[in-house]
Length: 218
Image (tube, rainbow, N blue to C red; front, side):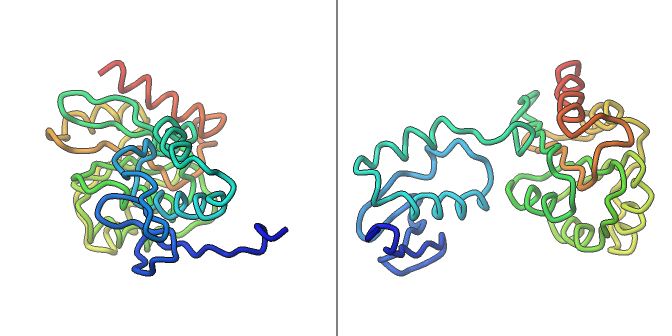
C-alpha cells in the first residue's frame, strides 16, 4: 500500500532530479542512470514519454535496473505501429497502418528526423485534415502520396496549407512504387494513413501487410 501511495513524477524534458527524465542520451531517476536511450527498440521521441511513465510506475517494484534495459531493448512495439519493414537502397520503410486518425499521423511524422515521404488516405472517420496538412507543410515531408476514399479531402487540406508536393494514386501498391521512385537515400517512406482502412481492406492489419508485401516486391 505504501508503494501505491508513492508518487514519482515523470517528464522526459524535466530538469528535476526526483523525476524520471531524459538527459545526455540516458534515462535517469534521481541521480541514477537507468539506461541509455540508444538501447530502446521503440521508434520515435514521443515513445520516451511513455517509457518514462512506465519506469516511474514500476521503478520501486523492480530492484534490478537491467530489467528495463532487457525489456526495452527487445520490445519493438505493436504490429503496424511505426514498425520498420525494410531498408532498401538506404531508404527506410515504416508501417504505421494502425494510424487511423490525423493526430497519430502527426506523431509519426514527428517520430523521425529524416526527410519523409508519407502515404495518406483510406476510408472516412469524419476527421478533418487541416492540422495534419499544416504539420506536413512545416516539416521535412518531401512528398505526399494520397490514396483511397479520402484522398481528395486530404489533397484539399494540403492545398489550403500551401503544400504542393503531393500525388494522387489509385492503390497502396501504386503508392509504394511511386514512393520508391521519389525517395532519396536517407529518406523514410512512411505509411501513416490518418484514415480507416475499410474502403480497400478488411482492417489496418491487412493494409499494413499489403504495404509490407509491396515493399518486398520493389
